[in-house]
Length: 239
Image 1: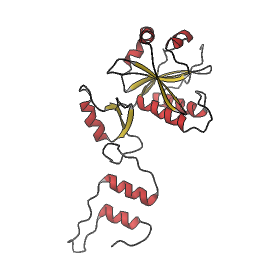
Image 2: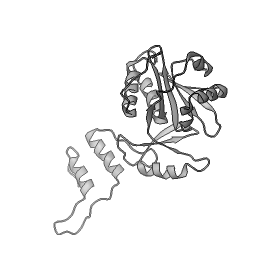
Image 3: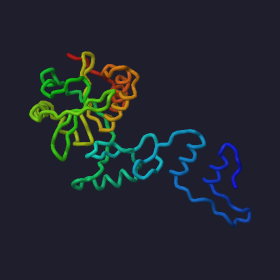
Image 4: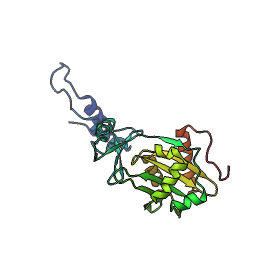
């Protein structure tokens, strides 16, 4: 039997097992890494990241999978990500592997007329193409969650003709992320998990209203620049 105490004795016994001095008897318990991590977190009070498909413990930097129909991003271990990456080329794949990326599109600058043609009423949005229908969807993150609107295909096609870099954005798993205000013109090609991360930042903000100029939004775009390896930050309108 285990003794009462801080719980460290329990973790040690579970992790390493026990042996009699003669080398016979109990060979120890067989526990998965996921169970061990949860027990360790229970004792220490620390949080545990785990794969949402198999419950395997994962690090803070981990893979993501997208469920296209539900537009939901799952945290995943490497094994599950590789498994579904092999299957995603099949028609109707349930999950798509998200390759983490961020790239500032310095050549892109949408003028007021072009922005109006996209029917976007706010200054913060991300645009995705749905592979199964070919539709382009603009999504507006805010305190209340995500609001979606279909983009006129004629307007999007015209934008692609002006800026061919947009044709390189992968359907479903990547997006054009735009912050367009009086102070900032930011255009990024990002993996879709970045967009949902931004949505989480806005929902968790204590500001009474959502705004592209919030400090938490600025911090988010600064981190994007760092990940993209860019020294030059947000371009001011007219520059």
